[in-house]
Amino acid sequence: MRGPIPPFDMELIGGKSYGSFIFVGGTNSSSAKHVNGAGDPIVGFNNYCRSGQTSGEQCGETVQSVDAQVCTQTGCKSPVISYTGPVSQPGDSGAPFYVYSGDGTNVFIRGMNIAVGGSTSRAARDWRRSRVSR
Image (cartoon, rainbow, N blue to C red; front, side):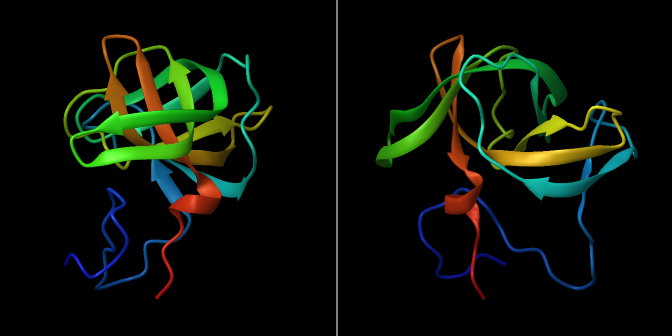
């Protein structure tokens, strides 16, 4: 159910507890990783991942800026994280943007995929700006 929230591309899902896990792998995967925390992305780091509804988990994303601006048909947003790597597809909006722990057992959220710019760049809303208060 969409509610009167700020113009973020996200939705609050209710009905039961989903815990602190995100789906990883392909679009038909039932594999999940525990979200162990959140933090700031590092410019130049090249192994971030995004797990979208349409394209599944895509890793090898490189953060280009943490102070970028993205403009879409709904207006301009800044600051956002700009990153390059595997292209997101329509339906991937709202996908978590994250990094794996060193041992690969957990993930750490960095943001939420919000836009595509051309064929190579994407934008994510920083995790602090992606939270929804109830």
